[in-house]
Length: 487
Image 1 (tube, rainbow, N blue to C red):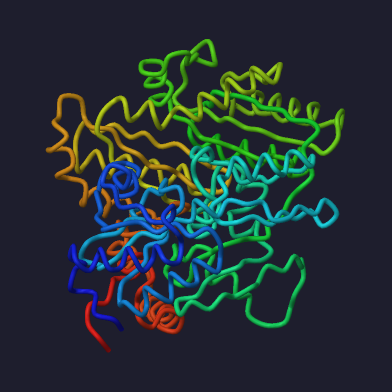
Image 2 (cartoon, rainbow, N blue to C red):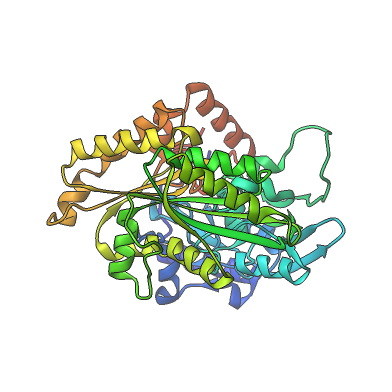
């Protein structure tokens, strides 16, 4: 285990920058503080990191050479994509004796095979560009999230990103057939196979998917593609109560032949804040309701009968007292307006003021129970706090956010943050859930993760880390505590 206690001083930084520049060229080393600044701040602005410079390799061999040089120089590497993460997993800190390794220059589409339904891309490809490359071949890459215009596919895979389509297509790890990875000693593992079935031992790619750059650096991936939907239907529904959400979703999945691709829970407070802060926001229904469900279903051919099945589900929902009001989008434009309202919820809360956020999951059936218990718990901790829970109810992922009580200062609000996190995470765990559904552990949740992982789970994770990165130079302090002394 390497000793990362002594920081990189100015003289060493000059020498190191020159050595890395010999590998990646002048365009591949960034030292200007103004240019570095956006890469050193966590996406929510909670933490500012530090690094003497950032290296941006142009291909896999340059990544491998950079890793070998870092190991020889006894410095850590923090892999970074679009820096859109929410848990500080792509931040370099001075105490980690680290530099940033950004994959943004590795942005080539290597291959698209419409017969195998595969797309091979480099790690620095922007997610929206990956989606567009698939669409040009009349195929679908279904990973979709709010940051898709700036996040990079390597970061999506390293953090096992989720998004709105997990219900139908799975998390990022479910969309990968093969990986190319640079290991901690600079070895390149070429696992870019496109096989759907390969039962010859350990599925090694799964070690790196969701590992947040702590076990190896993903440089390319072979992705699964799907047929593009030919029919789509979206509905915005006002519910009679919170419990109706999971009942209605279950019925819709059954009636549509499991054609529901997205199902989002939205509270009234989110609609109100959007109307208040976001120009162009429109209340989708005539009367307010405490809870809403935004649902989308798709089919592989036009006139599939999906519309009729969906309408029958909603009619039964009205009759069974699950739906108080609702509307089915009559056009693509109206459907887009529904989903735009969902997309702006996060920004609307930001404009309202200080907030505390959680990314948790529980079994879908227990989402109403979780929200009810969590609301009661946080009100007990901080009277007047404003719960703002929304998210992907179809896969049990709730973004349990909280807005500052009216009239309270941000300082007083954040003083209670640790206790609130503990209470919410305790409830999540008691209901069989996870304290991180799609954002990862990063730096911010290392302590909380240790509270809920069993001793054997933590021991196994440490053994994997020690086996693949024995010097502890890949993203130290992320997922697991950074070691500080030689073994």
